[in-house]
Image (cartoon, rainbow, N blue to C red):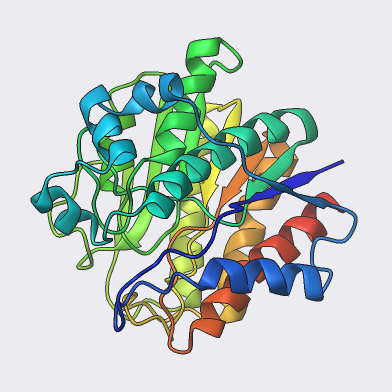
Length: 300
């Protein structure tokens, strides 16, 4: 039975006018259930990541400050989310969901969570709405346990994964690919193993051509597991995206990744990443489409 995980916590309590669309996760879960998008796949609540696993990627003092609510004001500002008990629990759950989904993918070939992709979090600080780096923790934990020998991160969020690059690219057993908007956040990028920076306004055809070439490099690395950060923010209606992809283009993007993994027998775990469309229902639709395509490719 394929399992897809979800954060079983309330939406983040944010001040009025805050631009992070915290309700999108609840909207996605409701849509997935209402429309039967997962078919015979099942939903499961994400577990909490334990401290040992969090500290594989993050400094102990930073982890402690997040969990105890003692983050310095400048670090809170850099994260962009006010501290709350819900934020601390949800951040642990996001990491726990990625790790559980990665383990599930190794058993069943495909898994994921209706959250995750917090790729701007660094060792001792968070950034860009990211507190802990779920993909880095999952990769480093599975490598430390000897469950896998090589892990690739395929990051297709429109924003370059600077935190993931900082945490993983020096590790010889990981390969980080980032396909992103060249002029978009973060403005000081940390080099990945392979960065593909795209100009503003990139359309479906140009995007898919660049991705196909980049996946060849991932194949050359011969990973035992792919952690796929899909991202809904390359969508043309995304307020923070600046690319020009359609719903159809994003679905073809997902299909390229999933077919690549299926043909090579590489387990793949999904994290959904950013999405800031106006209306936010566009982002939710794009997220849901990723799981629709996953089911088609893996015959769920």
